[in-house]
Length: 249
Image (cartoon, rainbow, N blue to C red; front, side, top):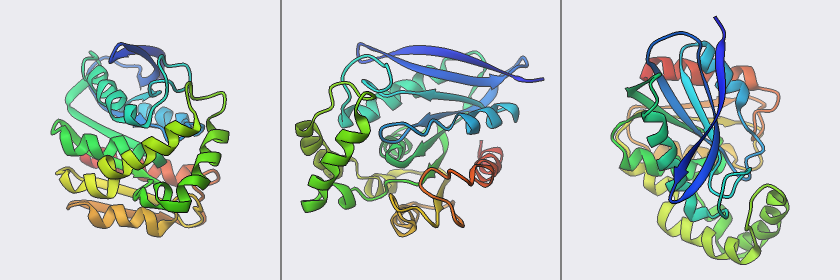
């Protein structure tokens, strides 16, 4: 039967954000998820989106304000508003069952994911993949200065308006206001946390802290040998996410 893949755009606080929809090529309304990319968004998870669509789950991959061609300047404060408006866009689509919508986030995508799950009761479940669970590991003391140079290099040519002062001011703001290990405590939906045993960016023990902070029902999955992007472990990652969404959407 195949799938339909469409480039889309939608408005968020006066800016046009870009995205791509993957959906079943059959009539009807389907469960759906919005996918929040990490920093800077090199890992697109398009293979995951394709497989979900082939299994009757629609997916919206989108790019935050200032990221990968979306209008405006990139801002860590903009992660949640961009995600909020992506969810609203998905909910309006004629192929989406609005009673069966969830969220997936990779790495720094844990920030808007945890916030949305806490604030939006319409969301039925969340999947955290290699989550940046506790921002104290990145935004405090000497770690912050190390992260500044790394983030500048990673975001070059991909994130509009990025500079050292923005990173220095906004990462601590995220830590104080939207630290996933804290905001997830307000969620009342089932969550799954998937980590890789060889992840050196967000190690398993960091990911586990988010799982421990989340309420029930929840699931912890550790994929043996996987790195931060599950580079050579895409099949077990996709299988794990698909099984969870089939049960909880």
